[in-house]
Length: 381
Ligand code: SOE
Image (tube, rainbow, N blue to C red):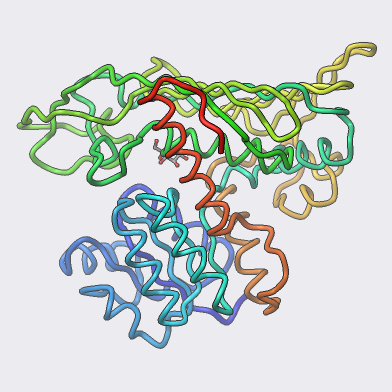
């Protein structure tokens, strides 16, 4: 499909997810880099990928690589994204883009100065139903927006014995639930409505101030199924859950709830957008459905079907009505937007994929949320 070779860093939960989506688009994955040369080699063999790099310099020196996907723990994003852009490679980075807003600002500036694509994987934008919601809001079906509420809740860190690198501030950043999943919600509702968060007030809670860390590694989500022999007790300084009150640029009020400790909620991103004419409600555990609330007519219920979707949503839909599309498809469609942009070759055109500027904005929001929580007051952006 595209004359491009991709290298992927990271072999955990996200690495294989990116590789699978790239392959479904017909984009060749030419090499991988794990946290050690041995891991790179074992992963390359398992995934049938031609090159296994010992380090990032080797990856960048490979002439077969034109684009790099960064799926390592967050603390490596800044350094590798910067080096890749400077080496002339397109970059698609997992969120969050960096560990703080100084780093993300520098990356955003660098990305603006080179003729390359630089994206952050806010994949949920690409559920066809979310793209359809975007079209509905933007063409005015809802009228003026008054309220935006919802949340992102999971249960994979419910027990003090649940552990993954994301719980450590040194690996993932000072905020965890907000940065890891809350930013997906913030990115999604802002990209649907075109509104920006203007001020906020946050209250966060670390329920487990210590956790049991297995002496071996545990991949994201797999603590629930992976047998563990020995553990050690470690202090935890990142939040498990919390709430944020929001004010948007048009005056709309909002509320975000995040938790990685709500039993039974596996990966539930939901929003309800209320306007003067209609409301929309979406539950990411049923991503092929959109509820359309009306006051003076019966409510509506849209099931994903290309024949019923708006034009943009349809162009990011691969399967017919009644054939569900889900989490892996959202990666595929986010990458489609990224590689279509590269193929078009006009790097001055506004991209449809989430950019480094969007990633930077999310980190600025995270820092405001942390400050608000620490100082227990409203913060203006
Ligand atoms: C873990 O909370 C995680 O894998 C996030 O890091 C992803 O961004 C989210 O899509 C699913 O949950």
